[in-house]
Image 1 (cartoon, helix red, strand yellow):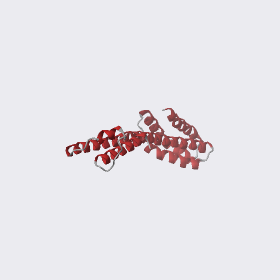
Image 2 (cartoon, helix red, strand yellow):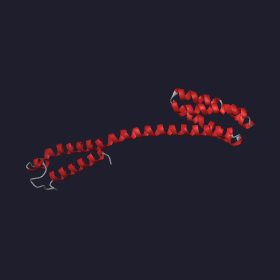
Image 3 (cartoon, rainbow, N blue to C red):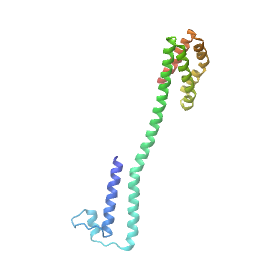
Image 4 (cartoon, rainbow, N blue to C red):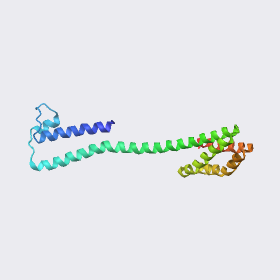
Length: 178
C-alpha cells in the first residue's frame, strides 16, 4: 500500500474518533490529545453540528482525493509504458521473423522460409497502423513493397532472393535505432 493509502487510513481513523467523541460515544481522559482536549470542555450545540458535519465530510473527501489522484496518475503513466513495451515487443517479433527468414533461406529451406515470409508480411500491415513515427512508418512501408519479389523468389526456390531477404533483415534491424 502506498503512502497515500496510509494517510487516508490515518485521517479516517481520526475522523471516526472525533465524531465518536463529539456525539458521546467515546470518552477520553483529560490528558488526551490536544485536539480532543480542546473539544472536551465545550459542549456541541445543534447549530455547530451542521458545520462540523460539512467539515468532516470535506476532510474525508480530501483524504480520498489524497489517495486517489496519485494512484490515478501513476496508472495512466503505467498504461503508457505498457503500450510502449507492447509496441517494442511486436517490433522485436518482426525482427525475429526477419532473422528466421534469412536463416531459413540461407540454408535453402525455401518451404519454411515461405511460411515465415507469409507470417512476416501478414503482421506487417497491422503493425504499420500502430506506428506514430513517420520515419519508421515510411521504412515499414518500403519493407511491404518487397513482399512480391521475396514471395515469388521463395516459391521458385531462387537463390537470388537471398540478397533481397538480407536487405529486408538489415532494414528491420535498423528499426532499433529509430
